Length: 183
Image (cartoon, rainbow, N blue to C red; front, side):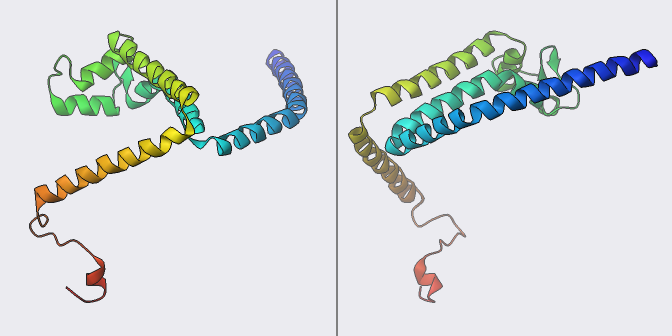
């Protein structure tokens, strides 16, 4: 028991020294980090669309790196679905797993198969595309892009309205006239 206490004492001393060194390093780096954060914030306010693309690209890349952990959390393990997980619940609800199905694709990715390469490739290309867009984006182009998107969405909404006519049977849409007691 004395050997264990001595080992734990040495470990505790080493842990305390490491924590003190980290605290000292953090106190030295804090002013520089705060300045960099302020610089990034100023740049993001001056170039919001580029900042969106850069931060979006970084986020997509980060999620790409997290794919194996996310699959493991959901229950797609390297040796197959993990007992009692969401993945096994999904598998038991579908019976036989068809080749090429979403379940088979995710399990292949978790096992390091070709699906993982596809997912990683999509993530890397997506993040590279976002950052490339940020580098080539001209601020004046964004207004035209936004108005084009609004026109496309507006057209889709009008088609949706015309498809359903006056609405779904038994569904009365709420409007301002109803609030005022008029119909």
